Image 1 (cartoon, rainbow, N blue to C red):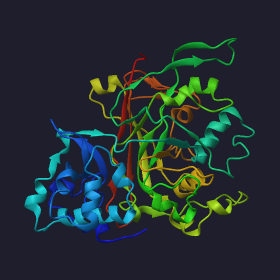
Image 2: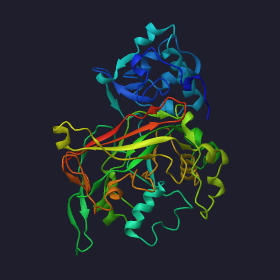
Image 3: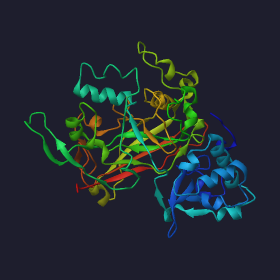
Image 4: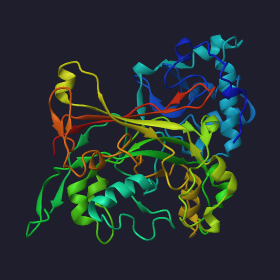
Length: 434
């Protein structure tokens, strides 16, 4: 965890919209892929309501050495080459861009030519995702859901010993704003003799953080827990849309399949590990009596600063609410530190058997929830399995998502004395089944 001049709360930018921007002040500088009208997709950096074009920065003499090499690696249609560089190279690019964008920088005139209005641009997935793994590290979600099905034994015996996860489908991951078609599949009511086929009636969200892998590892060469942080390039928001009725029927013995593979939505900006350095916090201590993780999962420094001071929020807007000009309703709000395992532990466990991770691979943390009802990360929890409907300002009620509903996830990294940074929204509108 390295703090430098790029984290200075007093630093402001000559890009006026960046100062006091809720998501993208100069202290953030997230990485993404964008296209402007009539131009191909290429790498960019968000600054206020502008996007800095890395393909233009890479050709400028204002960058040199590792910063220039990093800009060149990020100038294409995916950020995989940039993510695959050593963290120091990305840090060098961040430092140089922060210097060039800072108030009073002497080369403003040239750097202004690298900027595009974000409102004129389209955002894409930041990387070509080779593989996607979804973990189950949100212990409060696991407990809340487990109590619905196994009141006497909500957690299975392995949960506190091993990070639970499954390999998801990378091909159906989309950036924020992509429409979500209601999936069709098999479901079986508890009292039915046979399953039926049709559109999901219990469509849900899952509030997660996405973890973008930077440098990978060779097949058969595990990543040590003390080095795992260096392989995390940054974070995003992730909504792993879930068809709960399909999931209840199909998940045994191998876990969810059609219930999850129809769509996963991510926020399009990678909030870099460097930008998040001031917001690192201690991992919450394990309850007394819980087993200590095995040696390959334990690192004192990771326990001291392996979690993040990030506040997460889920917002819902129905078609009727939008027609009436009503603002979205906040369904829940809670901290991202409610994870039983650190992100470094997830990476270390993923590779301990020899699995090779590659730049641009994506991990999901699993649903993040609070132990009380204030910050629940799914409707399955918020409505107690569909038994307690949520009443909206229009008088509409919801147990699960209906067609026309717009679901958004927002996040803010916060720490005392620091300029907060945002993630950009992870948003999707439910469309009817095909």
